[in-house]
Image 1 (cartoon, rainbow over the protein chains, first blue to last red):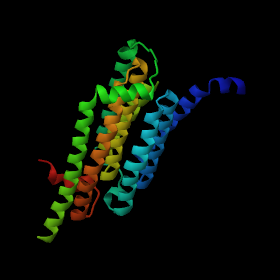
Image 2 (cartoon, chains in turn purple, brown):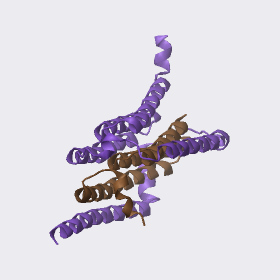
Image 3 (tube, rainbow over the protein chains, first blue to last red):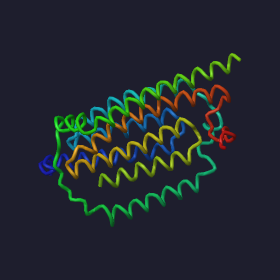
Image 4 (cartoon, chains in turn cyan, brown):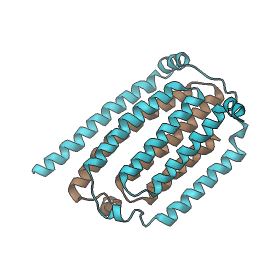
Length: 174
Length: 95
């Protein structure tokens, strides 16, 4: 029993991580406090990082933890602590769009599932793994234009964030 | 199976954006949608054995960071004006 489990450890861990990520995502919809939602999202992201590691793309797993969990989510948690507003969004979690939202989500899930079941299954599952060297070469030789475009996007984001803060400050003064 | 998980994450994130009231929770549900897309891209990259999917995942990381860097100051400014995180309080912002 244990011997079989050890032999299939990768698959078992994959299932455990996938199930935990799904549970975290479902908890995000029902938890009340934004901090609890943030913790559920962080656990989902960490489990997704585990899935990436099990799939063999270790650098994406590392960046998932480094960028998503430690940069984006720390920023988010900081803002949640800064804005602890206990208003109607705290006492009443759900908007009036609850029933249409759930119906639309179920519809989307059904449509995507239909497509997945009858459509993309024909993708040849080569499962040829690629390493960091191959990725880095492709990244900076084939996709350099996209890389530069994202750096432009980052500069634009910084300028826009500064403009938002500056504009609100000027309005406060004037 | 991983594509099914990615699909479920995307659908749950979309439902969260529609259903929840809190602006910050809506932002986090958008992050969940991006994570679902990332998972599907990694799965496709694994299946086809090419690096394009992984490159796209990296670019999505950057876009997500930029999105949060823009969205958080906007939320801060909104909350400073109206003292609420309820999305319905900003109904007059729709065109």
